[in-house]
Image 1: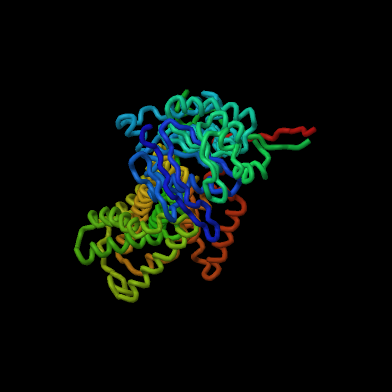
Image 2 (image 1 turned 60 degrees about the vertical axis):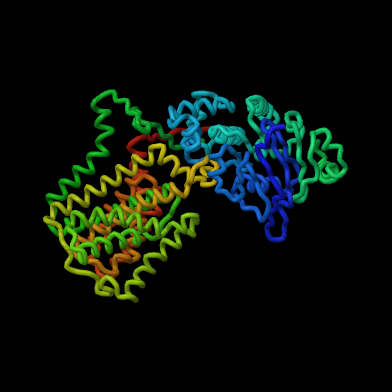
Length: 251
Length: 335
């Protein structure tokens, strides 16, 4: 097996009296699609924030390829090729949808990857938006992001993340709040990213859809990792059933 | 059945950001008139009014510069309550350079502009991470603190200030330098905000975490915006100092922080042109009311209130809408 692209070792974070993330360790191999699931409040988003640099851990380390990124500023981490989306969509509300794309396209990473030149950013922005399911040259891409429906905002969030041409993509509940049809529209995009060799880390509540594409799943509960393995394996475990499915009834 | 207002864009596609498709001379006029007319009117004013009102125009240009600088910072997500910091920094720098080092005026102003901007950015670097009200509070306190330092340590003339500074070679140069600077700042900042660089600044104001996530060092961009806005403010201070031939503690006064904000609110935030317009209303208004003695502030405050209540969007946005769109009443049926 090749060297892991992401190494999380004994990561911990406490907020006041709550141990949000409690001694979590795992590896992600290049090209892998890893799902992270767990009941609400189990520490999934905190884990993403710790990896992407938005929160500093109390202890533990995060390594991206052979580089330690624990406590690095978020923009430094994004520049290395680890990009994320936000669960609560974070568009630039006042800017038109396709102008939203200019901001990641203006980052130093994109300049570096395209050989010192930015090229035609507007065209690239439109290409990317088309890739995630915006109708090209429609009125939608010129609308202020604040006026877009939720489904489009989620797609925009994904497109902004892809604009950085990342190697490791962290999708924080990309499917939340989307209809079955909308999810069915985005799934092939993720599968395509996977065939392109991207490594993907997906935080999800929509287990049925996640299990269709995930290679491996990690289950969190009260900030601890309680299971790690192939999707169908993981769901057999008693602890997982009790913690997650027993109370939620979804599956 | 209801009556509703419907707004329709005028024919000329003038609202695209930088692409102008002109069909006729009228289109050209339509685009140029709002840009050139104010300049022409102003030039006419400068040659028709007497020396007193020329001084008022200079003071107006100074507040316009501070208001434009404030508006630019807001566009980048930083609400400054301390334009006096930039203003006072530029004023004292030029005073010191001229009085202690005997630098000529054509050197003190540019150096104070750049150095003032850099010093203000440096001072504010530690609070660049703060957002919203926290950043504002620090900017409010800093000029008030600096003035106390000058008072307590008696440096740079202490409470007396420094007088006898170099003046401009002629009052026309002074007048046109001030006005030209205000217009240069206006056009430069508007242009910058419409470029991709401006998009990043607006993105930071909208959602700074998202910009960081896009691999962009927002603190570097914020520092740059601060430097640009600070330099414009410092220029205003340096310019005013040589106009008064004096620099003293009043340059850090709250007036220079609050009046630019009032101008921006009256004129319309987010456009740079609005704050300039606001300054050209408020400063002369304040002069006209000078004859009223004690009632001056009351009337001034009242008219400010009327402006804000009647036109909360700001005068410039209102004029712009009227200029770019038709309005008509339409009947709407709800079933």
